[in-house]
View 1 (cartoon, one colour):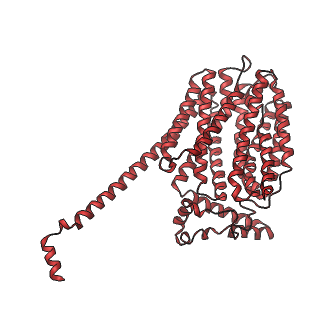
View 2 (cartoon, helix red, strand yellow):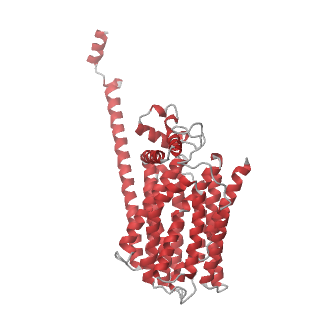
View 3 (spheres, one colour):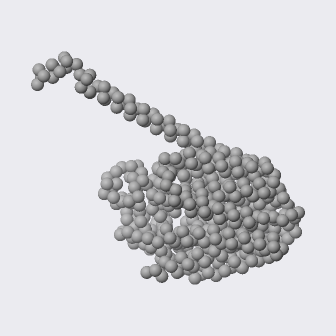
Length: 495
């Protein structure tokens, strides 16, 4: 039984390691504006980088559905192929148009990452979900850290040209592509190919089945025992209709799944704590994507790579490790996050806003590096908490659905921000003005959750005040001390 989950988990981790072990990643901006490509800063910042955002948004939703429909493995293979072509073009293609097409292919590889993170749930037993998820996510951080450190060592100590870092990265992603072919093909998926073994949501518990729909949705979210497991006893109606639709053409089953996904989504977001974490997830991930995309651009402006040594790889490695340590440590913190959700989200958003503001206004490369580490570690800490809080009371299907919708919302917001602030067809602002706007953006996020927290406190105070008032009236009206003698005589006579 051990081999049933150990082999696919090992192969997936191997694929994840090589996919993320990219020594050239921390130096991509320096490479594009350097002598190898000889592109201008404006071309890179305002015309090339935005293409990734647009392609990611355009592909995310269809890839999300196609990934599940094709059962993950073909999409993981597609990710490897797109990365190979991306780095081949990065090495040999010249000119603005070719580099923009390369960025589009990189968007394809980013959008298809969802297959890597979803595959594990289709090949292992539900009892191994937590271990499998931990291994697959941890190995990506290890791969990214090893790649960053390798790149920094080669650049700083061996004086290796950036072109050869891309060659090493190409070798690594090629190994990932080869490894992906050895992944076992899943027999099931979360939505379109559910195994015989999901209970009907109407039969979660005998008690919950008697509740009205809105109450049922909240009970299903708040009662850990009401999760919908992947391997129970009967296929839900949606899965049965999908299989019937596949046997007769597939159109009706596909639409039925979409309808069921929509209804599930409405139920999930009816929970206030889950809605809070999801809103923060979407808003902050939008800012996070934007910052990590353009952090190297800011560093290049503060200290041009052609004039001095740069330590981007070291900074990326440190920020990743600290973020991983913080994410690991938060699992041992015993706090009722639901009681403090708005305060936590507000406070950490302020920390991020201050870090980004310092990065923008203090034009010192070491201050920029430290601020970036604080920003990235803080985000990784809080996104871990958000991931746990969102997934704690959801079935795996619903978690995947909420994760996909939150990510889509984040990329949609990022696209809007890119069109207005970055793209040359919009305002096309310089990098320092952009980062000032990003700092203000996180201040806005903090203000939103501060207002939500204050509203929650006022609502609680009013509720407790009403209860105290009602309690006082009850005691004063019905205590024995307040009953008059005439009332006692009347009660006695009528008896």
